Length: 290
Image 1 (cartoon, rainbow, N blue to C red):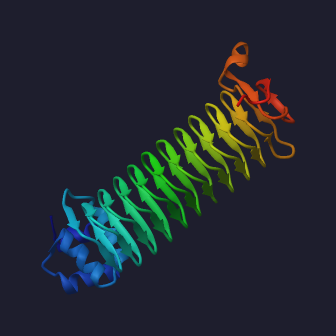
Image 2: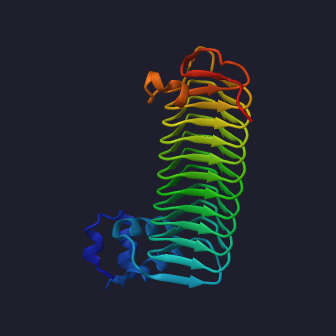
Image 3: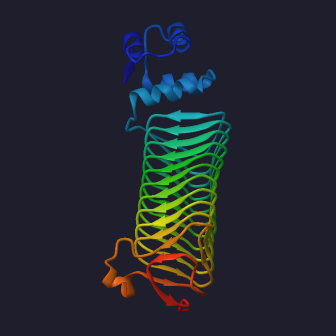
């Protein structure tokens, strides 16, 4: 794709960026070479803008490793080893690494992000498709996943976490912002949320669930240890914890919100070590069976 002066101007670039383009590419430029030139000139934000405006390509860049200030590629990145950048990794399509991926600012892909090692971003992590790490995921700002999210080790998110598919974490999960998952959340360790936690389907934890605000799932919620929220606990079906189920002071606990009253005993059970205070709906079934 060749980007001419009039073609770029039609996208209403910033004045400084367009002056740079005229000085260095008066006669136009091919798409990816222009992205490379912008990054080399330290104009990473302009390269990001250009990719956003003109979209992805089917090109594939295959390299052994990436160790750079930044990389903005319009197609798919396929890296045999690690990706290490000071600022941003941005791909129009997928990012695949045989090692880990680490960025000082952000990691963004139009499609999937997959790493055989860990994924770590000092800013945000954003994928239009699935995100998968064979080790852990650590993100200091928000994390957005357009498909399924999977971390075989722990997952830490310092901002809001949104998942369009299912979320699986092999060890502990901690989210400082709002956690919203359109399908199911399954975590082998503990789930800690410093804001609201919501799942379109169910939530299952292999340890405790601790939520600083409201905890809600359209299906059931299950914890191997305690289930504690400082706000309301709501489940469309059943609630189950081996230890206590506790809502915040002045808030209630609701089970069976999508189940007919006559079916509560089968599909809206509430089981815990002791009957929760302010159990507003659901069928109390006693202690949780091992």
